[in-house]
Image (cartoon, rainbow, N blue to C red; front, side):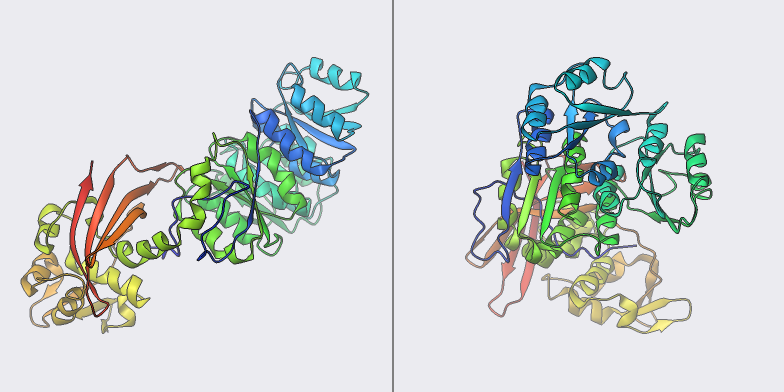
Length: 494
């Protein structure tokens, strides 16, 4: 099933002094909270508190034990700071002193955060409470028991960090326990904790059955899944689900490739009722669309982490992408499902010659989807069984608005068994899947009524990875005086 993508942006922006172009719809303040390492980043974020009686201390070397800590930190209005396993970093120590922290919750057993670190805290006249369990799942239960009795729960995988961190600001705001589980079995301590609760009206399960099995979900009270094809789309789905809980004026951006910056940023985001948006150097279309949909309301963007994780280049381009977005939507989206952006061609005939999977009818269908705003059955006669009848003359007339030299024979030959000679039409039953890529404009030029667009193809895989394989293409388009245009060629660039 195809999704209509609202916008394409290949970069985000952040850095205190970056100016947006005059045509940008909004110019939010950009604040980067960074440091030389993850400990310094956590300290930079924690310094935003100014003063706090409490802090939560998590291990900076491993994520599982601390994934559930944001609601506890929010309850005590405490920042989350990071430490090495065996030694309290100087930046963390100085931050505890500057905030005048008197109490620290240590998350994890002595194998995660050693007694030596605890002793260092005690020597600073800081009282410590260690919260830990037999494993990451039990630790999440122990943290949950520190909260007030909930009526809603969050259940996330304990096998990776992204889903729990995406949900953490919302869980912190609403004071919902975040329970970690393996894929296929509900841990005994988790089951016992849930059984001890009365009146749980909702359990939010993050991910589909490939992440948390149905056998677990069947044991949860009033379970509701929040899903997405990868960690970035689940991040967006979570933020959209709880849109009414989150504010509109601030957002936090963190890398989706490492846990530390997002972990320490979760409670900071919760304090502002802001979402955490997971980003990457080249970002999935869902994230871009979500960001742009709310851009007019955003007045402050916080970047969590150093340029090593979210580069200045990545940052500075967001405000400059408005025209590139328009070009992507206008000229590239027609080809998303017809595969034509992956091949070189210098004429319409070469498109089908180079690409054995190409069909002019597929491209016609895309034109109606992206240009006319609907599916074919909304515009053409439909026979019983859902078969849509589209006259060849209509297909040729439509395609001739975009290509010179389109013939009836080209359309019929590429329509395979769908052509009905008696009706002189394509009779189509649908069923075509989507390509897992999005085209993204990286540069463009207009000269002598010829528009050249350089672009890359972003492959968005189910595991959340994004790849472009360094493949850059150039699409050439003739701009007609009457406002129409014709596609001329497509070429892979070295």
